[in-house]
Amino acid sequence: MARERFYPMMRMFDPEDMFDSLTRGITAPFFEEHFPGFGAKTDLYRKDGKIFAEAELPGIDPNDVELHVYSDRLTLSAEKKSETKEGGDGKSYFRSERRYGKIERVISFPVEADPESAKAAFKNGVLTVEVAEKSQDKAHKKVAITSEA
Image (cartoon, rainbow, N blue to C red):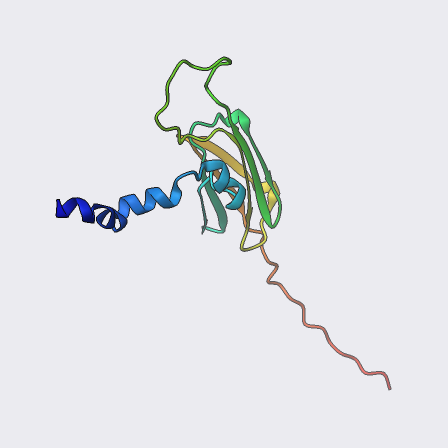
């Protein structure tokens, strides 16, 4: 009997229960609206004078991805289409966490890049973009100063 009285208090400190109560009612569209790019986790790194961006796009057809590369950034937009048919799919869901819809990202480069060198490949749900860094001209010229007398 004593345990039943303290049960609500015990549940209050259960980490799993606390997380469920905090996130109840918050859905993926909420995260995408308030935290842009929630749907496409990306890594950005430099290797051998090139910039690489890798974006996870699980379940997205590469034909539904649009990619633009600029000297200072890349923009990525994609759409994951719902697999349900019109009129419903006849399933009674207990939980639906998979997200369908549009994903948009703008990823800034830490250095200037050469958009003409951009290459992209899609494998196992990961889009890899490779762009060469713009070479900085290190050459210089010593200029003689003349004085007019």
